[in-house]
Image 1 (spheres, rainbow over the protein chains, first blue to last red):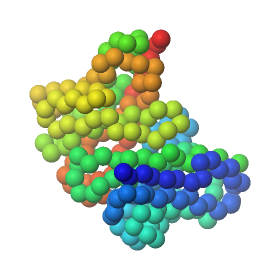
Image 2 (image 1 turned 120 degrees about the vertical axis):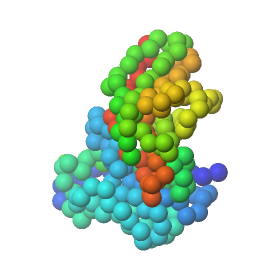
Image 3 (image 1 turned 90 degrees about the horizontal axis):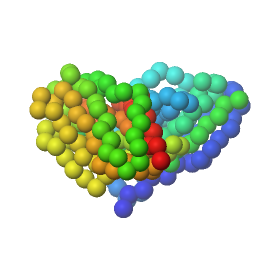
Length: 114
Length: 112
């Protein structure tokens, strides 16, 4: 069966520090991968998605970036965190190609920027 | 993807049925209707999806209007564990990355 991992589970970082969040998927190949952010009390905002290694699409211009160095690895990064980057970060995967395909979400990383 | 409209919040008594509405008046003929829910401090989880016909699974039922401009997620007997935010999302054939765009959803409170 497929599983999705995210780490760390929680993170507290000072403003201006770098960020690296990692997501890995097991039990499937060539998944579509997604990063979402949820600010406190808000809905989910799609940040990035990837349909293959090295292919990244950005949904929202900001100080975050994403990379996909391996088929089942998706990384979210920042060189300098802002207070507004605080939130609940969720990685998801889905089988590509069909609009009825589900997305499966990881456990999330709760980031607090102080 | 076309836009959906849901009530911000709803309440239900435990063990009563719950009908969660979703309006999608600009839906296209090839858009699938998906429902996800998000429990507190967790990622969303898939509930159900459909295209034209009503659908049933172990979690819920999805009733789709004949003109497809609205749909209703039905929880047959609400439990305390069903307290969550429920999202109604449309997905179409032209979405290359198959990405989802979540709205603000409906926050369901289940009263014991």
